Image (cartoon, rainbow, N blue to C red; front, side):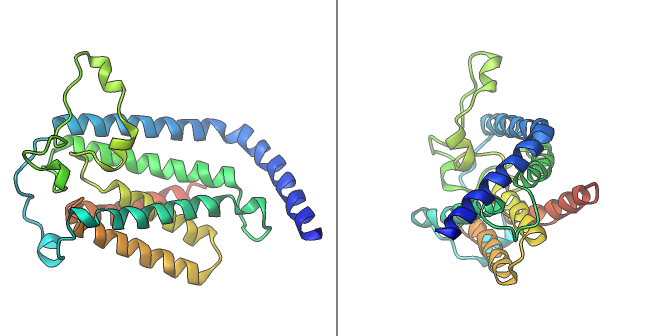
Length: 241
């Protein structure tokens, strides 16, 4: 009973602190959320510009890694969502433990600053040059390989979030999934305290990177570019805080 009361009091105290921080950082988080909308709009435009090909471009990763096939498409997605949900749970640990040396509002505001910067660089890349998607649903002859243009210009302001998240085409360079998990991994490396968990996270990130290529969701270059762009953006932002 004592432990339960301590946790409740801890949560209430943390909530008061986080509320004050949110009063100062709300605009950063709001801009970060708006950045997700802008990024989604750009990926939808890339989807409409997408010109499918019967076969993917020549790719070293495709030559080295065996093709998993459509039936194993869920493997990389499952691992991605496991890491994503784990990161969300970690971000709220200050409400139940005194050990984390960060505040949830500050963590999310910094995460979103880094994420939106990467997404804008990503959008500039895939809108500059369109590549034929290697994913099975993006190949020539598939009804999902192209998104029709809207009748009016304002139709570009609306998009299907679920489709854009994992089943769009054309927004290849650089990999969005790799970007998300790398930012999460770097964030935990800075704010987390468990060395074993850090090692497990980075092993999972490496595994997802390989699975993304093996599943033919991205070309190898899409993953490779994410691996050096994300840390450059992450530590550039870190120097300003």
